[in-house]
Length: 33
Image 1: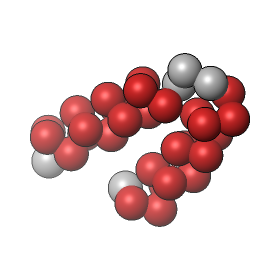
Image 2: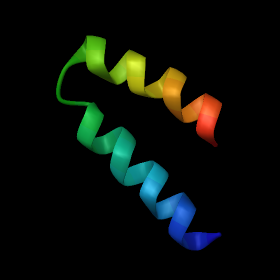
Image 3: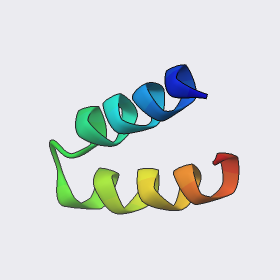
Image 4: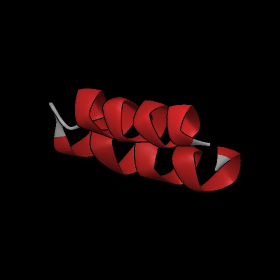
């Protein structure tokens, strides 16, 4: 559970470099998590 939470935060953080990619990754995160 903690690993998934850490992975999710890391993924969103990595995706936050550009606004468009960040928005896309938020949608992906909602689907997978």
